[in-house]
Length: 191
Length: 158
Image (tube, rainbow over the protein chains, first blue to last red):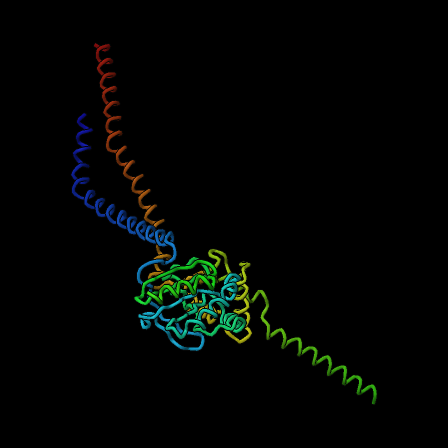
């Protein structure tokens, strides 16, 4: 019995004075790291579950076209803007190419701006696609896919209609039809 | 004279044919050369599939782009830099170890080290607890048994 008490008496003060504070900071560090990691993963997972941007102010961007011209979205506030994400390797994009070009030719004199954003594409094929479909509105590559990431696109084609106040007025996932596009533009122009 | 002309003509044709072959090979890089670079890239359209085995049209265009750049005399690093600049660092199989990307390189080994540290520490604590409480009690029980045995022996001896 005496031996047991001696053993406990010898180890308990060391446990209390030295080990407990060290254990506390160690545990705090590990749990802090774990919480930060989980938080980061949670945020990323949450972002992936969000669909494309469909309301609120449209994310700003600057597009440098294949011809070298530069367009910044915020510089065109007060103007109706149609943003179209496309790629030359995308079959469904071909279904809407002519409709977009026709709409552009019809509305360009009404102060409507069309911007084509070329997603994950090679320049030669992109230029060949524009030539094939006779596209004349400004088009440029999405450098580092930053614009598509800001708009959280899920694929191509996707079209966003930005109202005059800079907010997103409409989002179309998949090929847009000429009648739907012109109806939406007429509605917004007459507001 | 005829023999001389014929042999000169044949030799010229052979030389032309050989040089023609060599220059054609130089102009067009082999699939292996293209795939050496392609396997280090990932197209954002087909996530988790390396470019060299990706079957989509987008990937085929990228491989053609690599082939064209190799034919133009670009080296591997220049091509990877071009793709990284144009499509973002997420297309690289091995993103550069700098800035925020460092986290992705450091996190796995650091997690393993912390996990091992925790396992060793837990084992150590379990061992200490056993050593602190169980061993003295065992000794105490043995001592009591020994004292009991001794007293019995003394009783018998008396």
